[in-house]
Length: 529
Figure: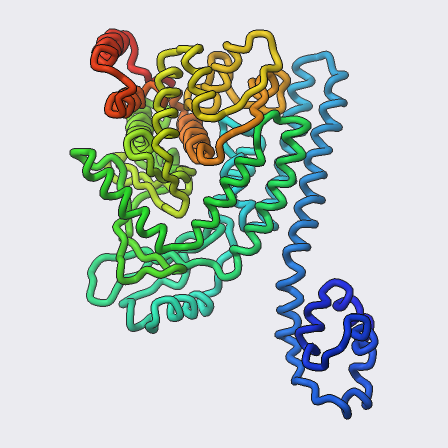
């Protein structure tokens, strides 16, 4: 008992203060007080409050968990990082190219197991990390194979806790609000889980999103650790302003814990897409406004299959997943998503910023539904127009305009190579287009010939990170579906329209561009395998 109390004092002195501050003991007296807690003298002199062991344990757990998570992260991250650095030295002595590639594959598999274990064991924000890096265009194939299974691996909140959250947030009992509530969730993510239900007096099913209790503080701890790790990596290996990216992630994820904000965003995007398209481009769930609070969000139920299960569904229907019909369906899916995102980013500036596979459903007739509006972004007008200008530069293959566009957006670069203009344009393509540059099958940030090694990104606007992430997620989907296309080429008309209405593109320029595009469209459709 005495040893335990001394340990508690050393690490959490404020916990002892909490129990004994009414005694007005000085700081140096507390250890002595702790050792005599069981003494009769203390018991006679002071009326001690009742000691709730469970409450005390919960307080210790709450204070200790962030330190424990930080320790776990740094031990595991350092192990993975140093493993790669040692391997890079070892593989540099191997002259046989095939043997070196085999060694790299084995190293990636070894690291993938460790990354998977870290993300699975720690959960929370690290499940989002797995979503970001576990993409076919960005990570080694061994990483993708392991991390893609983590989408629905978040721990589930017990039903009795879900009931308490619902009743506290809605101010009514579950039976007063719902005709039926399925306590077994249909999915669980890092911040919340979703349940299928039916409201009283309604004939259609709804989805109820319920926030996990206590996850916000832990996720903020994880983010701060990642920021520190990003500072280390950007000084040694990846010449990119990763710290600013992490700061923007911290801001965006902080918004995800307010479901009333998410409901407003969902309504706004649903109205915008409906007003700007004659037929539905992507489905956006309708919010049930009377059953929304900061931690509970209720919306219409949309029937569909996760995009990750598309291949299995195609085979199940007796179709060849590599045949023409399947290829056409995949192209239609990507076209719908690309058009919706082009309109949101370039026309409105307010967009859904989290199109990872877990948030995309495929409905009947290859219609697409876009879920989870916790991460949305509104671009300032100068940034929206600057990005439109860069889109045109990439679509036109204009290296000079692309260099100017990067500077206009506030992306500060430092050339580490001779052919600066070519490498800078390639970097712009890698960051802001879904079509990989010629000869590039997969992005390898650590590779010596990568654009980031040749052009250091010293400063990157935090507000632009959501666009960068959206384009990369779209590219990941295109690689996964086996469709190689350029979102910059698809967004060209939208970028022209945005610049025209802002006065940055004149009538004569627009007519000239339209003539060139008609000639180009006769030669190429812009979509390919």
